[in-house]
Length: 120
Image (cartoon, rainbow, N blue to C red):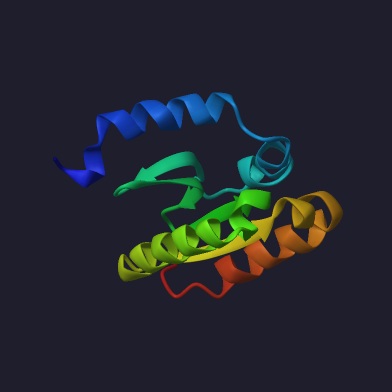
């Protein structure tokens, strides 16, 4: 099976787009959607579905809930990040708490990474 065109994951990604977390909605509607660059929500990349992806800068933005701070979540995130890194993709991770309590800082950080990207 071609990992880039996994129909099962594509279906799951559609479902996830319709059921975004409060933090994903906040980041999407109040910041990412307004950027001039195209940002994809719940994008399938290989065997993973990432929260947000900007192909122009090869940046993935992940919002981490509490499960990401448990041992199994940490290990899965490390594997995912390594896979994406091998594809030349930078992964930005923010906790839900960051989005809720430091929204402007998260947005500034994303813009800073985009502005220093060597791809554009």
